[in-house]
Image 1: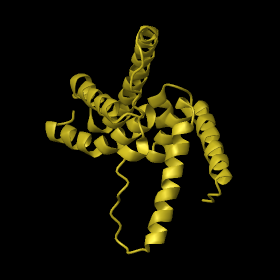
Image 2 (image 1 turned 180 degrees about the vertical axis):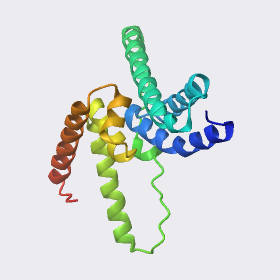
Image 3 (image 1 turned 120 degrees about the vertical axis):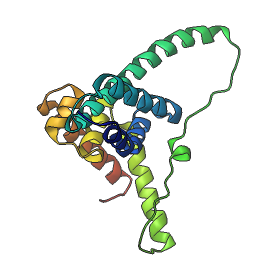
Image 4 (image 1 turned 30 degrees about the horizontal axis):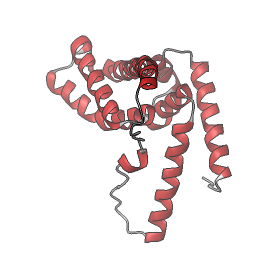
Length: 188
């Protein structure tokens, strides 16, 4: 059984990566923050008594389910409000721009030229944009495998699918990213 301190330390260790992963999925900072907070609350409420070693997989699964729930609610809400919008006259549409909201500043130990820094930032921006364009399941598998560094079995458990499906989703995601980045002249 995890102590309160261990549980707190675990949540602190995963909050930033979980938030960034959620932002990639939902493309909205406020919604991503809500998803992460809801996931953390569910973990504490329902699984706080579990051993510390089980918490990472449980949290990944809860985060995935909470994200799917958010998409389901959005689909319902959008269907309702798109019908209601037929009765409204004009309105402001606010577009979410991930690039304006992501903190792209990273502390680097070594000094590098402004040109290299700018070039690297541009490449990272292009990669982030292409990750956003992946289909949801491919994006989820890719982020879990390569961002969260989960193995195939852990990713399959978190996504609720077979290991073969995870491999397929990751392979297709890597191929799509490779093709898109090469089309933009980016060789990694």
